[in-house]
Image (cartoon, rainbow, N blue to C red; front, side, top):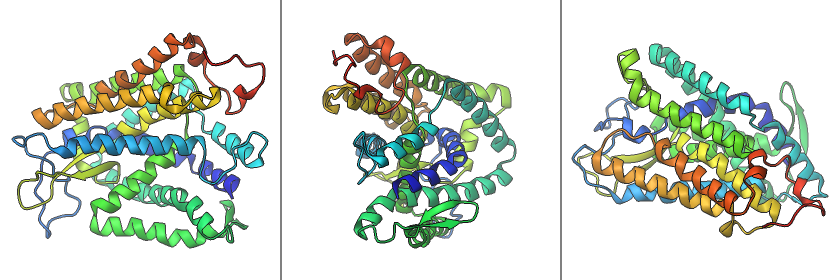
Length: 385
């Protein structure tokens, strides 16, 4: 079932690529969306109600950091070792998973294409908001159904003692486990429920599944590619948040972030909410996914060298991420001004990672990176410094 599930994930790889750019579009949505007090009879597609400009720093701002860290720890570990899959080097399941994961390897040129395609898509949404919002809602409904199914499949398979893991041939999709047909109504029902109610709980479930889907479908294997991706995202954020208004007449990122209402953000209700309606703080999926790719790579490095995650690249990078996001939340929650989170998250993750690599004399090695999960299991590999 594991190899079949991974093949189906890779069949949806183009959809995941679309998710990447949209997650980045929503980067720092919590800073960009103006507060809207939405009554029950109002349009469900109205922007999420956020804190007013005079609100104090809320404890939920720090809860966002905890939630993001939890998601990244789970996502990185799941990307390294899928639930209930034997990842022993001699296992057929391990080989199938590694082969599927390598198909999602991000290359250096892909990082440049990502920024170009994302920017073009952002402009298209800006000029054709009405039509694009419908298309994006349909697209995300499909992706969310797939990602939620991928998230719960291994647990459902274990719960049913693998009784429904037998594969059947499905036209245009290939072999799929029978269990998929039982999970499909649940996943589609969750998406329909979100479309009808715009429930923040369903939004978070779908957003969580999207993050895990992406982190387990696409991966980085070198500091060179990771640096290219994050640095480009850093300048991408700065341009579209601070500079775009001087070229397009309006802030393109603000316009798009406030005009789209899809599950590309994690919503956390404010504890000190004011007014009649529930107000939220939120974090865009791009703020979790893009640094999360580096964290997944960090954990793979630690695992390849047999180093505990709490004392290797992963721990240092995760601490840097949490510190960067905390600073961002404090600035945003206190001053209520637009702050692209990548300004804090890129140096917060890349610098600790590079510092650990330099201290251990591995900077050149991690710059080129891993070729596969098993590559460093050879006996003639050098010991970890």
